[in-house]
Length: 276
Image (cartoon, rainbow, N blue to C red; front, side, top):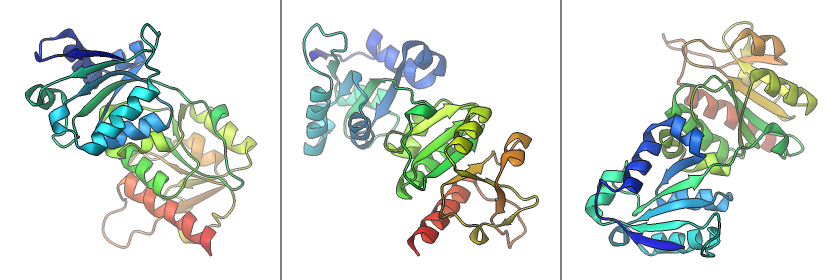
């Protein structure tokens, strides 16, 4: 692994890092994305993602941070001249403060090589639990749902017809690295429905119309919980393809919950039923 020290915010490598954080088009074009923080970075490494450039502030790293860096060096395959040989860039605290979106990220920000999963890459359990999100827009919501999916032991998250970049830094940050711990696939709605039906997975669409309370529906068999956006809900493609329609009873004056809260409730109902 090559080592370089940078002190100026005008350095091209610093400008490139900042551009990757902001521009999804650049992330797609270069096949790179940005991870910030030792926890997220460690999850990415464990999932097999390879570092491209690691920006490291020794003064801000504790022993765990140093251990994660050593893990990254091993993951990068440190042979000089290798096509995937990574670059380690040491930066001072003042410069790290300019490149980090959070102040408490243990001195680690990295550019990583992207890896795309397809539906065929998914390995499902005997009675899989899957979350499907149609046309999700807000990276923070998707990140929060990924955290719940990880906590509930879900087999996968499928993002159908996505409107947000799966490598958006806000998504990665909101998921605290769950985007790396939960297999996540982006595809069309038609592809997702075909995959679920061929896999023998029931499709439960969360919607207000023609629905039964979620706790009255059997989730002990292979189940996909399908949710739409808070503004428009699910498309007719999913409504017509559903095995059952489910809802979360609303006892107050409002008619909906945040989609990430709804996902957590439905995931843990599946967990509850499967543990009885």
